[in-house]
Image (cartoon, rainbow, N blue to C red):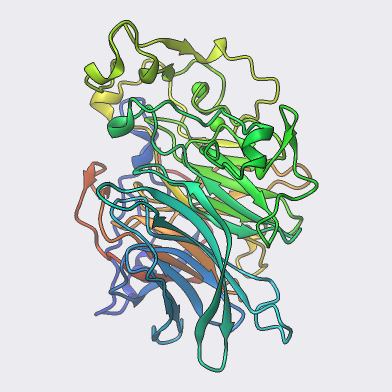
Length: 481
Ligand SMILES: [Ca+2]
Ligand SMILES: [Ca+2]
């Protein structure tokens, strides 16, 4: 392992007691016998780092607010918290008691600040997305909604709740949940496939390819909004310029998504989203109106590599309920190669983490995934090489990947990993000065250790980390081979 002295100096600048558990992975040439998520290259820039806040209950969204505070949602804590980035002071803007949370992918999720928040007019609006419980008696009927609050700057509190859209499906797995407001002043809300056809939900048909009918829309039946990215008027209505799919205009903007947990808007209004793959092929997508992102028929590119769609719910003659879920389905489960799918409107990803060949052994090597979550666009000139980049926070690899946004076409350059620690990075925010990057971390789960395997031992659970740019060290992202 070769580490530049300037990078060590930057690490040495981390002050106790707020030191991060920064680990340096072994730099490798990416040999075929290594999981690609455990590869690490020496970054060309130096950063200092510190922990600015701890004790958060599963922070999920972090956004830089117009008041100079970091606005954070707590998935489990059900709170919106404003954090002063200078001293870490936490101020609770509101607790949403209606939030229902019992699994790893429900609770208080996305949050979007209205672009006119605190700009001196009436639009002091904060939009949040969360799960709630509609049933009575035994069992849980979990749904998701988007709610608008009005922020009172005099009290620092969220009030006057107004539901924007309710009764959206939400299950026990693959919840998506990221919420952004586009340059077009529409809400974009990512919905996961609910984990259908997988693990504990393996007998539920996957509905990521299902589109709503005209009757569904007339009845306000949003049950097909699984594995979708929705585009919604600020009052919850279906935008008049949403795409018409199978003859029906609905909130569906794009479909065929698995678990899109990250979404952002670039200065030109383009929407980017990240999503989790199954065992391979996490994706970063440019989200375009009416396009089909392939899942569950296609994972990543349509290349017949490592992935075959096995439709457990359609098992015959043995019904699915009699089967035990596993990596290798029995013969009664219909299987479909990616090349069999005929999707006229298929949109391949911009980038996958990672596409591996059929010879890659998932059992012995581990899943070739990073579990991407929050993403953001970096536009500042402060870090020169970063200007116009997409940043992707990764849960299981504990890094932020930076990729150049290539001029003109919205495509992405090669990913460069930064900020490796023994944490799960849930979301990130960028200070307006472009010098400081803030990251919220999961409270529990597994991440890549300094030895390259997985560990449940997280260095900074439930925290906000700050990385500050400390200069260019001049090694231009080389890897050591
Ligand atoms: Ca896809
Ligand atoms: Ca594929």
